[in-house]
Length: 109
Picture (tube, rainbow, N blue to C red):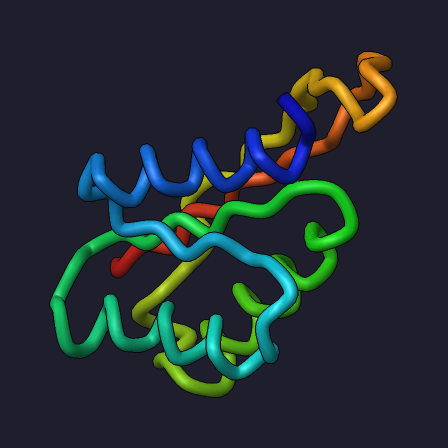
């Protein structure tokens, strides 16, 4: 299974699990900001997890900070936890490669 197929499969499984998560990828930056803000304001959850892999990790950090500082009240939403790890996948040639992952948990005070 290639990295791309594995990521799609895992994303579908995680979305079915009902987690309050935003998965960072190649979409426009503001789409992810809107997703985070909507979960806090419209749905009313107390925590949102921002998940990313590989080259999208820096985008995830930016999404968390812009959402928290510019769109949500910084005094009400804080970074509760940051988790880093790496996952092993097979690339298209069948070689095992490690991909860095990051989860940022934002929570209401």
